[in-house]
Image 1 (spheres, rainbow, N blue to C red):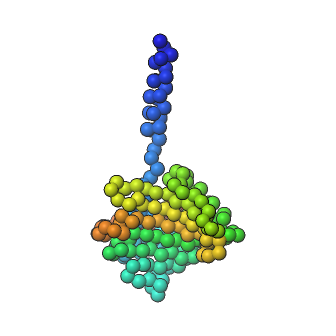
Image 2: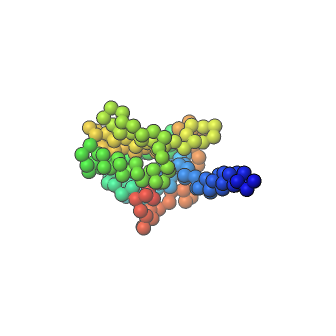
Image 3: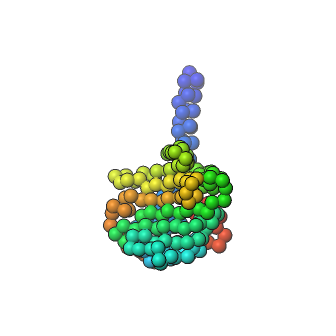
Length: 192
């Protein structure tokens, strides 16, 4: 009789332990800049976190271009922050190449993202490119996305944070404190 009680008790214990595991964090912005933030607050927040230089010549009403800076411990060649209806919805960051075919940078970023967000939804070779992505569901809306691509014959490794739900919706007004200043003792993983 005791054996019949042991199996349900073990099943209950296992489900309780799975429920106690923390869920991976949601992605609702980039570098503590929430999706939907206006251009001015996005620009200030990005410069504060990365120390990049704003490139006025290559920027326009739908995209802000930045040169240099750092992301996740890597030097950045350039980054494009994209806007729809005045609200931030996408960051594309190009890492400076340091290895042949950019494979080491890709593997390092992939490992950092996997540690923070869990296993990717897709991880494959597409032609000569390596591609990995994570999806973060939003009930009733398109999922937010992190996507990394190694472009061996292109600009290096591209890291994309994107919110199609924000792109399709009206922007949120920027509030004081939305773009937080850089942390002095932040690790590379804090950027992800």
